[in-house]
Length: 375
Image 1: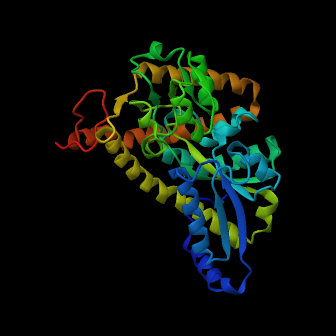
Image 2 (image 1 turned 135 degrees about the horizontal axis):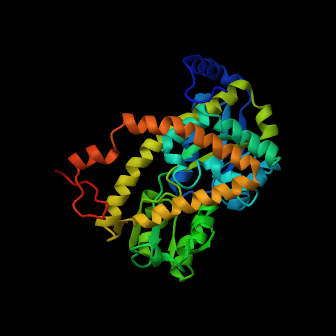
Image 3 (image 1 turned 45 degrees about the vertical axis):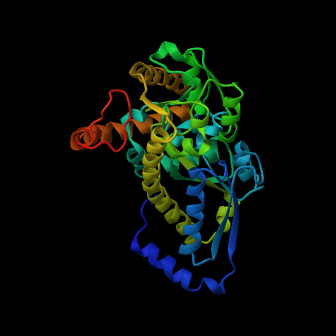
């Protein structure tokens, strides 16, 4: 299948289509996100909607609604399947209650076999990942939807804690907001986990219901207000170092769209992935600086023994799931095969990020993530 950056022929066709758009009836899709309107994740959705409208010359519009506008946040997939809404902007990790294979459509927890975000995107577009996602949702889950990647929301921080942690033993017994299969991994590592939408995390922390929480990191966590409750923020994490959100459409609605409109959606989603991602990285850098300098947050390195234990535990759980779930194994093996080619090659060709970064911007304190240091 042809997926990623569309050719000049497609763009030219879109331009020609747009020229006559005023003579055509406008198609409007009613879609809802899992995220509240205050978050940058929702801005990924609205950017996509804006690009669809502009590229189509206004002949295709998306009514991009925030969480809860029509259905609760975690019901958007079923609502799309039933055509209560035309589509949704969400994250497959929320659907592990239907099948644990869903988490692999985000890239998956753990190291994703060493792949970074662009590698995982490569697997989706050039390693069969998107085709496997369609097969999973349509044939395994028997949902009437069309799936496409759009939201690069990683790598994510390890999380926020009410007190410092020095090693794996320190967080055992703590009650923490986690989600997806990462929650299962952390449970096996000794953490008590609860799942809740992003909007419920801070109120729960203020009431003392939870001792720690994972959301995203950087600007997302700043906007949610974690710094008003806790001051210990640990990064990095390996639970979602590669994590990709989705845009889904009801299958019948998708079939009613013209081929040109379908191509416009694909192209707009590809553009959104890249352009929003670049903007988001700058927003995260600004947010880390503000969290430290304005709000007194201590941004600390996650203890390495926790990260190693997570990888080992995830590998164990993934092997167990693959032994009883053939489709999980099929997708997981596909990721491994793609990573076995690109990860060693990239490790050989690319200098470690820290090599040049430390030359120009040496860290001033061991264990702390400093922003803006100058040599």
